[in-house]
Length: 196
Image 1 (tube, rainbow, N blue to C red):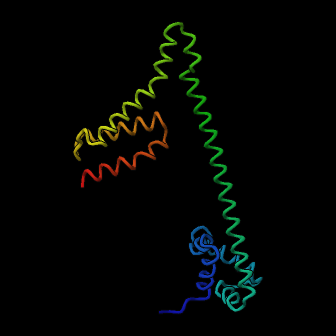
Image 2: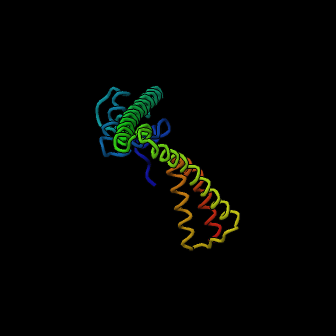
Image 3: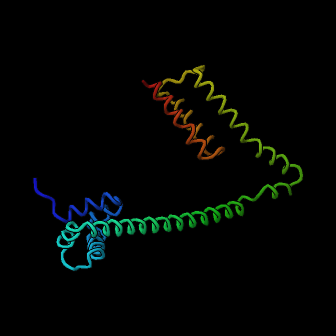
């Protein structure tokens, strides 16, 4: 087995301090080696090959401390840049959702638009408001029947696919994504046990 070069040893030290920085340096795509040279040159103050600078740092405990500090500062800067980018993306997403909601209101109207219709408006509002409980309790009843094994649903039966689709639709559209995330693992586990 060959002895690692001075630069490879430095990379090992950097990986100890800040794995994200080490991954950036180890990957020459996107100027990783340039970054390594910049960090080493900032620590040593010397110019020359990466190997020479790495050997210089390995020979001095003070320079190793300076390298650690420089790497941690770079890792912090990378993390701050990533945070800024995520905040900008979140702001853009928020603006997109707001624009979509405004567009839906513009196209579909609001409950106050239905109140303007004399008798049918009130009936439509009642039907619109009662959908969630009706579909929710119907799905709850079906789930109870299936999970209590009152209704047989063998694996591979087309009804099992319909059952899963019904739960996805009702839980997803009427109760939101969180409901699907909470319940679907139980449904998947139930069908895995039935298949076994």
